[in-house]
Amino acid sequence: MPIVAAILALVALAFVAPARATQRPPAAAQSPPARSAPRYEYRRDHDPDGIGKFYMGREIAQVMGHEAAEWLDRPEREQEEQPAKLLDALKLKPGMVVADIGAGSGFFTFRLADRVRPGGKVLAVDIQPEMLALIRDRMKERGVTNVDLIQGKITDPRLPAGAVDLILLVDVYHEFDHPYEMSVAMARALKPGGRLVFVEYRLEDPNVPIKLVHKMTEQQVRREMSILPLRWVQTLEVLPRQHIIIFERPPARRAQ
Image (tube, rainbow, N blue to C red; front, side, top):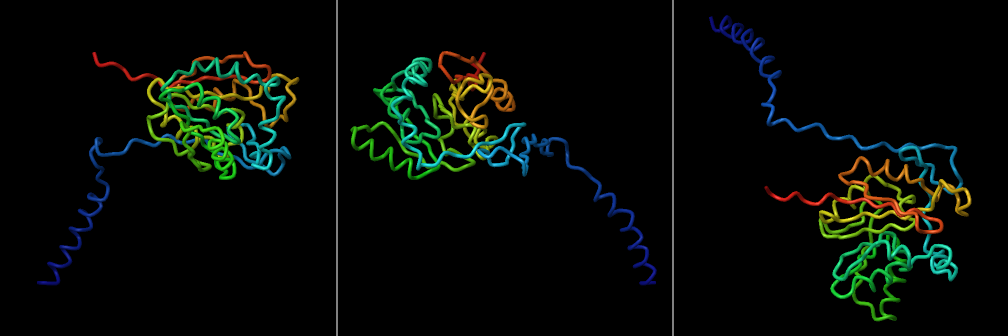
């Protein structure tokens, strides 16, 4: 009798167990499907000034090392790029928090710091400690106190969330090893109504004397930002060689 009972119990489990295994949690308990990020591609045949890594159809350029910092401060840059026009176009105000991504030697860092006084500050971000050391030395020489230095990572500029009024990227985005991850992090750092500004050499213009992999079209920049919670505001063509492409984190909606 005990043997018969055991067999009957096993038969019952054979029918009950599969029913439990196929049960699904309530719809509210299921996680929504994650939005897939664009994939990176790697190619053996690539531009000698690129890294062989492609994002949304363009090749990522090699990073300019700190050894070339003097090129950033070349005297002819004032005439070639007319940085004062860029600064005017940004419409900076005292009290703003501005991030200078890929700050390099501080060419724009100190100009930005002047324009957000009093009460404002600049977050100078670079992945190369040698560049940050150069800015630190110049801060001491010039008595500048409204610049914070941040050593970023190749996937994260390490900016505070929701705290930045404007993020400026001058001739640097095309060198990001992980542009998707960096863009997500930058969008997260903006305040509602904050702006993300790209300054890139115009690929559309064959007369701009810069290697192709270090130039970008407006269309490409807008395409890469289209997957983020940002909206394109405008593109300014007031500079001799570069686009100024401006995006915005939409302002918070007011309660009705």
